[in-house]
Image 1 (cartoon, rainbow, N blue to C red):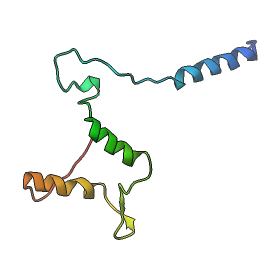
Image 2 (image 1 turned 120 degrees about the vertical axis):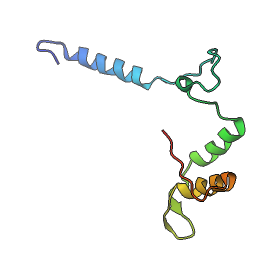
Image 3 (image 1 turned 60 degrees about the vertical axis):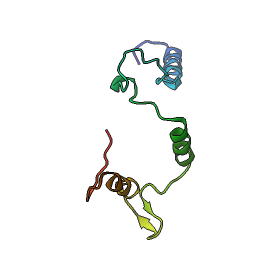
Length: 98
């Protein structure tokens, strides 16, 4: 705080900054660019069913990295790599995100 400044000014500024930080930063947008999967506009929208299924899992705890059979740490690859191998016929698969 600046020397000689009113302490009330600091409280007011902190409250203002906190209020601004609480507001939603991400907002829906209309993609009128002509680019179907526009990387600056959040990639491709999820289908409603995919969103509902993701919400059902993501709204609580999940076994993303927990092996239920072994009762210990697992790998997130265990959920998606077998599907990708089956779809592509590849002997191995690795899924990453950015």
